[in-house]
Length: 488
Image (cartoon, rainbow, N blue to C red; front, side, top):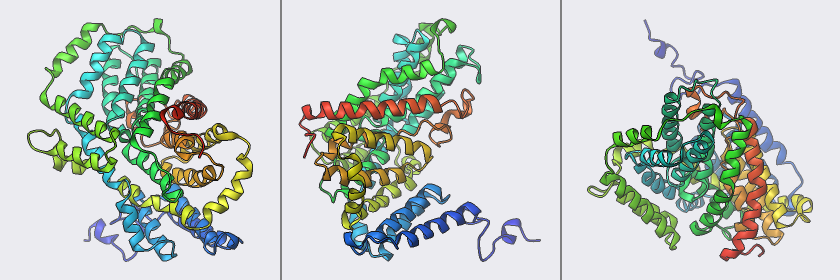
């Protein structure tokens, strides 16, 4: 008798026995749609912009279709981008190597290693309990406090790690308050505020969400021919300002949407948090070392050290014997290599806008529509489009970022606006995918049973729209005070 595996081990692996991805109708249709887009758009009469402009548009559309709709891993999509561009003559292997080498891959690697220190120490839980003991005496205050703590941690730590840790803390508190999954307004509010706040906090500093933030910057840089980028300090100036001004109204949106009232819920006494703190023991040396490591990395980045250099330097500190906080073997196993590969290769798509006539073509199409809205209006439009699309195309935020930034950045420059300022809100909102419960980040705490798939939609889209309107005002009015001009 043959085993089931041997019996299904055919020449054509349609079942996905070896790859884990079966050849489904969705897979076939996505590749057919990509091929059709490439062939049909290739026929457009765009030769006045360059002989390869129509082909570049077709290749861009084909890659976006695969990234958004195909069930293959994002790392495989990244390889298709690199090798497809070589086959069509948009870049050679040297360009791929130089793009990968100058990409955010190593920066992401270093920042993720440093961020893992929080997972291997009790620092995150200690901070949450300390703040709750001091301020968490009302349900609405608890929502705000847990949001701020989640966002603050997420400014330095992986969003995923923060959501998992803070959700477990929240579940523990809700159980102590006898809040029932499925019927608790407080539970629903907290369990949706935590991932939202972690994502919003991830945009405060570049290292808060290394993959998404550095890729957005890379898209901006590549689509403007390497002329414009965003430094660590510039990002921090905008991110911190936007966060401080909007975090309270963002929390109020969730509180109002779920009709949370303070008088309906009694919270644990202060002694409860004291017992939790006592169970963690005294502050350990590992916590102190990790905080000093993060502070040192951020200080070096703000002082002008290259982001990648600082990230790798303090990643080394994080794993060195005696002074480190993270075991290297465990850290390497936890790295999201698929996302890191995407961060290294998918920014090649932005080169289509700068190295072919595609950027000028898109600029001619779009500029008449936005010519008279001014820099703030342009910033609002791009931020709104980004926020809506990253939530509509679930789990495809990289493709949306490539499209929106790649199209908008050349137009921004052609209108005489500084993309470092005007495009910054769109770069922030590129990771705001918390309006749809089926996004893989949101699903991290759905298993606790406190919210249904429909629950994030209304408050999530309200927050996205609110931020898309307010972030541009903050960036365009405040950042020039930090020496970042609004106009070129």
